[in-house]
Figure 1 (cartoon, one colour):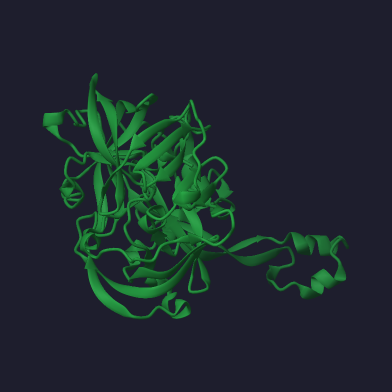
Figure 2: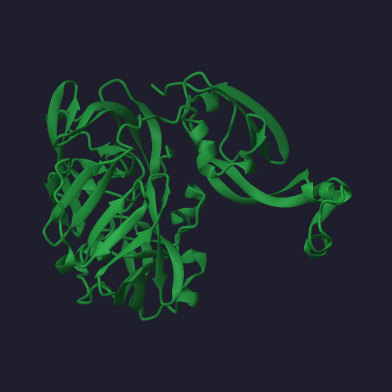
Length: 446
């Protein structure tokens, strides 16, 4: 998928909290287990069971401790207890936010179990990932899994393989590259190179599976890490402490030893948004989901190693949103649509027992009222084709290119904005109860 929904988290408060002595163990004779995941906007969503309740969590190598979005009213169901308040600070220009720390939680991922897990519950509504992904996400988990187990990520087949380190056996791989990892506050860093203006520059990058972008770089004139004059300003994503804005551009190449990704997208976040991230010595940026998905990975924290092997996503071209629109899921709205079941009844096709058991609201003999997903514009790039056409933030999308928006997922609609330059986009929107129609052509943003 090409949607760039970002959720970067750097929780500096975790640095001094320490880790529980308890560890994940695999409860089977093989000491290994596979877990299927959903790949949504380059992000890995896994099932996590907490105190007997199964939830959906983002797998984020850039977070130290599990976080639950507690405004989703899951705390009572999870029987969260033994809480105390903490204030957490992360990416974005906002203030620190309050979280409740909870201990003695039972956490299970497949056959991997941890008996005494710490959790952090956050009530900040802006951290709800579900509207931005169009997919339910209840929390984030990262270092607690990776530090205890060898974690294989197969982006193509969409599974994790978790293995206890003592049971893991490496296979020979001539097409793989192996990197040493550095760790800061439980987060993994990798050394790579970028080519900017014909100059190859060594960079130290956070491996951030919780971000769906491509590459973030912190501008540094002395190192030659600059956006130059060919860039555009854009919304980059939501961090723990607020929205993040910056510049988007291209670099000539990203080098991961023998693997070279040419003409890769890059974002240069505003320095005020990443002030805390830049406190890590010699850090130059982040490597995010749209790069990570192009490889299958083996994370071996115990030996401070990571192994990469390119996969079928490797040659997928890098693209930008050419409309300027960022969408989010906006709950549900009532729509009037043709009721095929009624038409079949009139034709004598529908079985009697099906007709008896069906419940619907009928407006006339051929139509019904149904609840369907709605999508709203939450960000609009300045001077973009969509803005110039007259679209506004908070416009609710009714149709795209004459097709009802509810027939699409959030990712499918956004995919339309990454199509070829010149493609005509026609949008019908609901603006404060008025239905308006707009059209524009997709353009290169710089």
